[in-house]
Length: 477
Image 1 (cartoon, rainbow, N blue to C red):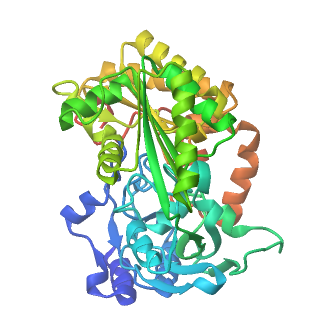
Image 2 (cartoon, rainbow, N blue to C red; image 1 turned 45 degrees about the horizontal axis):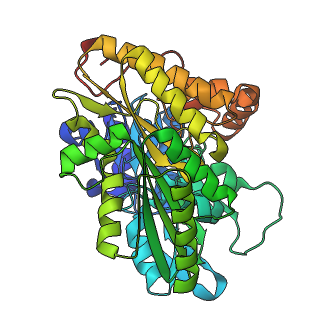
């Protein structure tokens, strides 16, 4: 990057507000996806006004800007695929105001999810989406990806809690959109448009989130089955009862075996399992709902049903479920768990059909695929275990991925339920949203006429996703 531009950036954020050190640049070329590309400079602003000034510099010089939270995304959304500036938001990490009487909280984009909930707990409230990366992910990134997690079935995703936000446009203009009122019927909902935009329309700097009360009581039930289809049927039956659990997690045999091998058998050995959580204000409500869950599971032939309020046991189960992705690499020596097909969504009633199709696709392409996820809202995760140095395994994996996504689209589903599109799902996103692409491109052009905000992602990606890989496969690095 030209030294004159670096000097201009330094004048805005100071010497400690940016870096061009090779080790720092290399580090910020990753997120948690399969991709890597080194940026030219990393900028760490402290205020919305600094973000605005940096965007003015970038706009004048047509420099790509990739907004970045904690880098926990799994699809390459925060990878600076065109180089340029990485706008890292971790220094904007203040909870600015909690207004309990008005049911909102104002936060800066770099606030960590768990830190926010620790603050909200003082007032008896919480922000419920519960992403798997809760200890690290930042609110701005959650909004940009419309992130969610285990509790979305009952409480909703990030978008459902965004009342308003501040973002900086490509040309540096600062925009405050939305309100701090419970109801808002005033025209175009720009705050909702920014949810899921993945940094392609603006840099989110502050967010107003709606508060909800934290439930006082909870219990969980572990339901073990001989096969994953039966586990899927159990989830559909619980929802159809009707009963809306706080969460309902599915794990297939590949996931269970990986966790047990990596972490010392914390789970029963079975074909598939569900971990169902119910919450509420009283023990009576929670006991009633957990009893219903157990009854449904037994009626569908569960081989083991364990209801409990034991917090240590529940924490053990939850930790096991959250460790699936990292545990999968223990299944085969020299292999890694990679995020190709990742977090597709289908209607809850279609979960059994979807997981059966995933198994058939894995067998057809001779790849190891683990299926797990937040199945009570139809959000399934699949991770593939491959030798990351082997071109043939990558090729077979991508073919399997395309068929997995095709199945989901055919079932009326989506290629991403919570992780976003980025790069890894871009071709399939374009297939799913084919009739919307001209409108999406028109919005992008209007908001970012010079195409400097996270360019090359989502609707702009072209060709195969096998490129710029972080793994030592020479053909695709």
